[in-house]
Length: 131
Image 1 (tube, rainbow, N blue to C red):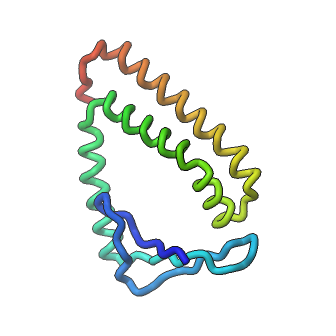
Image 2: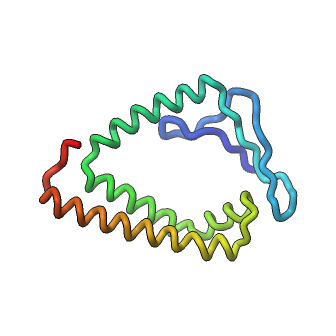
Image 3: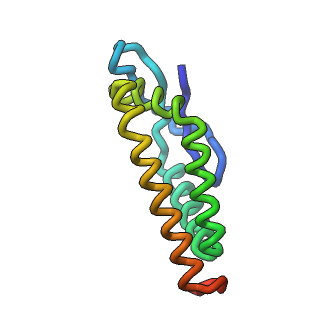
C-alpha cells in the first residue's frame, strides 16, 4: 500500500496530524493508499515555503524557467506509462483513456512552452526582464 504524506520545502514529509484518508482503487474496490491529512501547522508551513519559493521562481531568468518546464515535460513523457497507470488506478479512468487523453495534454504543453521560449528570445533580445 502506498503512503502519501506531504511535499513541503522540496521534500517529502510525513503528516503529523494523526489523521489520514483511504484511497480505494475504483476498478477493484481494494485499498490502494492512505493520504495524510495536514494539520493547521503543516498547512502554514507549506504556505510559507510556497511563498518563499514563488519569490525565488519569479526572480529566475525566464529562459531558465523554460528549461525547468521542458525538463518536467521530458520526465513526464519518460514516466508516461507509470503516470497513466496511477491515473487509471486512483481515479477510475480506464488505461485506454489515460493513455489517449494525456499525451495530447503533454504535447500541447510542449508546444506552448516552445512558443513562450521563442517569444522571450525575440522580446528580450537575450536580456533579462525585471518583471
